[in-house]
Image 1 (cartoon, rainbow, N blue to C red):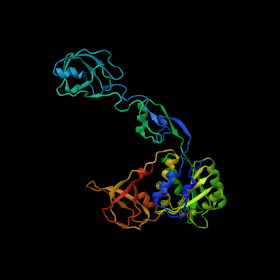
Image 2: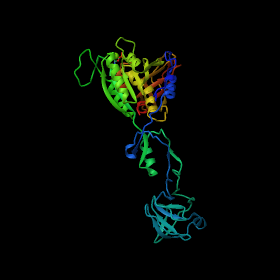
Image 3: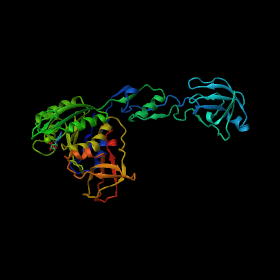
Image 4: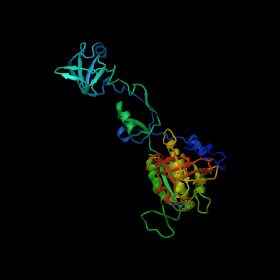
Length: 418
Ligand code: AMP
Ligand code: MG
């Protein structure tokens, strides 16, 4: 099955906007289909492959929210200050079994099931206790301090939908109805390459002509954060044959092949020709900065993305375009990342007709008001900017200038890297 349907590339030579590129990705990409059953303990970060229907109510029975005394509200309404006999005790896991007579009270601990017929609880600290009798405080309302059966979850309701990404709170939610395991999508298998004769692996000796490969480190850890299983396939030399063979082999047992570098129009940019021989490749000219053409395509059943070589361009294109692609391929429901409108602590002019993502640092001032600064230089090879920042500032297509204090869209890294 094609992972990136060909018709999303119609008129690919035209310049498209960032929004159009995202729309094309979301309509063209098809999720992997294989699933696996995993225990809840192993399922953090995984994507649900089935709707989960609640097999029971939570709480399963009416129970007390506090330590105190349970009573029947209709008795209390008639004679609120009457001393009541304490006829038993109900503890969590050890309910009191019996039918309390009129005006009786049952001592009850937090989480214990409400005795039959009793519907309201007075807190222990609010009553006056005298031997085996208790006097309740005035002004209690019906049902006070009592948790109702099914008030959190109703048996039969859709608890979580297919495509939900499982965070710690969802694991607790699933556990609360008694499930021990769930069906999730298999992790996306991604093959990762860098390309370039100038590249050297960090840790190896370099020379003045070598550039240490930073993209693979960025991408490898980013892909892991996005839930992928990554095969690090190292650096490819700028030779057509080498690139073609490596990509062809990688496509056989991966869902996505991701490369960086070698997709420009230079003499040593072989990714395009290699893909032309073994699959389909399309260049998207997206009206964005930073960014060169983004190469997308297909080798057999495997999706292919060729990122620009410059580290900032590679990082930004991954966060803004590859991340949503990965989400869809992984079976996740696609939601735009959380973003915030915050005042700019800078002014700038901008060309209309393209989206720009600046490296931004959001900070609270002494008065507790947040502002975002931008890194002073914008070159797409300047990794210092990404290290300095804690997110990206998105400047929309039509904007031509920003004045200090204008509201701009800020996307924290924490939202983009999960
Ligand atoms: P390319 O797209 O191959 O023309 O590369 C554009 C620029 O990015 C060149 O200056 C490359 O040296 C640099 N570059 C490419 N790949 C990497 C990488 N993996 N790590 C760091 N820099 C890179
Ligand atoms: Mg290169």
